[in-house]
Amino acid sequence: MKKAVMVLLSVLFVFGVAGVVLAEEVDLNFCPPSCDPLPNSDSLNIFWKIQPMTTVYIVEDELKICTFIGAPGSGNFKKGFKYGAAATGVGLRKIVGSISPALPTGVSMWGLLTRPDSIGTSTGPHMLGTADVDLVKGLEKLYAAYGTGEISLYADNSASGGNGMVVLKLTILDQI
Image (cartoon, rainbow, N blue to C red):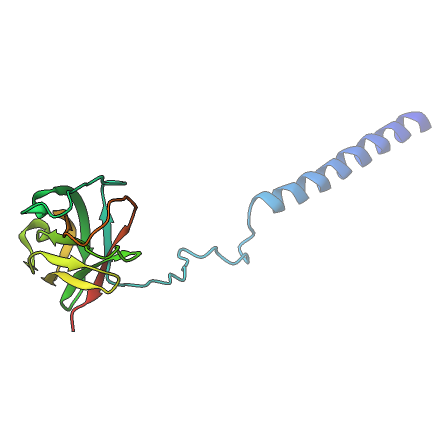
């Protein structure tokens, strides 16, 4: 009989411990009535910035152009290129151009840009040098527009034969 009571107490002890463990598990899985509710909203800090977009992109990587020394109308030796531009925001902008390095004596290069997507005003052909010259003025509210450009090469009788390379730089600036 002692054995039966001992077995019965052991079984009760095991079930009691198991009940306590299960009761603890239930408390972890289900919130008691005093548990605070989870929030039904959250927030996020968002830092923002707005700025105008002013950019210019020449489609071609290079041009090759030649002319003859002293040829009448040597500026008829022209090459065209395409460019894209954007000038968003308030205020007028312009596209200026320059070349670097300077050309030799007797040699000149002229540049002409059409107005991108018929916005603004082309200032006509201008001799290009190391200082910026206005090529297109009056740009505003221009987004992803395209235009064409043209380079002409001249050589008067004082020029020497030869070859070289210059870099054409187009820049969008605020029109003041």
